[in-house]
Length: 130
Image (cartoon, rainbow, N blue to C red; front, side, top):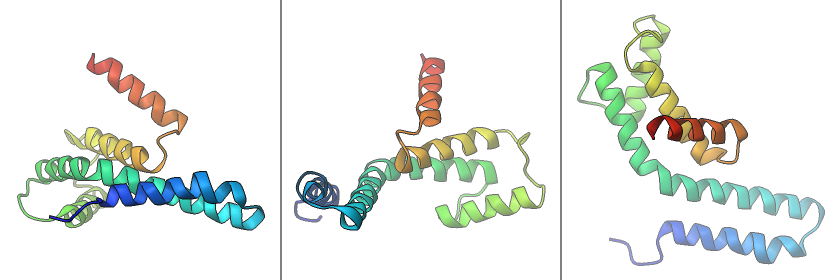
């Protein structure tokens, strides 16, 4: 086990320093680069928070879809791409559309959580679950 602080805490501290201390003092190109760096750190924060659980769920879905017990996330995603490319799986394949949708929502949760279409999709999913 790693001693504290955890990776998420370190990334958060650096992002907050950039946003609250450095960026207000910067102008022009330097301010732009600081914003880019802060945004990259925010993506890492979200990935550290979301990816472990969602990657495990994606792996479970891939194993079920492909009927395989072996393989890591990368290998099984390649196998899924091959199955789609060669026509062995289509959107009519049970579970495929749901898998692709869940995977897309996870990617958006990490990369673009303020994206309007993502927010609507999450709201629609929540209303269906209620």
